[in-house]
Length: 350
Ligand SMILES: [Zn+2]
Image (cartoon, rainbow, N blue to C red; front, top):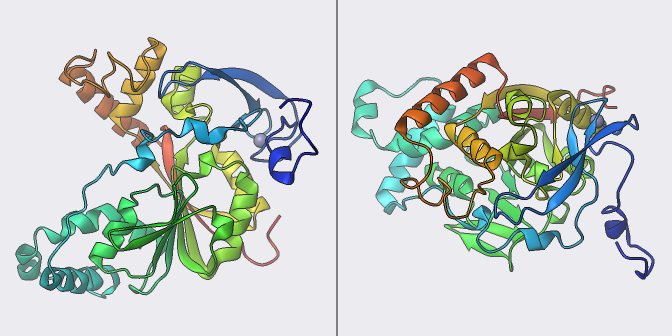
């Protein structure tokens, strides 16, 4: 921030360095660390604080030109999964079968399951979401916050039968429709209505004020609603192993990296509570963190993510990383997790 700026607006004030933890709100001291931008390899250094009360990490000062760090090549502008469009008759069949599987009292008969062997492909991608949220009908409204320009999960939910789907994403040139799913350019605060499910797939760590965002979630959740947050977990195995080379730190795009305790406290402050947690991690987290340790950015020549054959990782490495990631998940100490939140019971909100 320069001194010649006029009086700061509320939004600008939020970008200033602060003394309290963005996650738990405590004023206890923080360890200062420096993290480099290594996705695009600018290697610009950003100061983060590690809260001594909750172990969460947060950037000290949010860059005023944050949009600059989301160039058109940023992954949220790319579809990472392909969503096949089906003819009408097949869509109706999928909807009927998924409806029975997801909401029915009984599973599919073996005979029917065999006849639609390809249907579960799409269903499998969203099965944990449907079951975790306890969705009961295709009319349950679902919101994906920070869904990117190509919200594949919403597209798959639509493919299997859901209809009341909405995405919201700040880094767009305008509102758009992706495979029948409406995506609004904006923030959660721009969205009206109540939702049975509000999802953050690796987007909550990007928001400038996670507490304000979760309070907006609480205001928009149906009474029996669920909020799904998939995010890195700051105080786990990868942080201990790789420190500032851990790929998930992703400075300066990740404004806050939540510890488990930090996320629980943040939820409480917003009138929510943790209803469940499932660990997730993959081999790529090892590959990328090993590369950062060797000063190889994610998207530059020599990176496995640019040229798999030319990278320093062969099939044996990948098998080893995959097995280690699976062990971490089983032991409940991995790099990222899916956390389910619900509204805190009356009188318990902090
Ligand atoms: Zn904290």
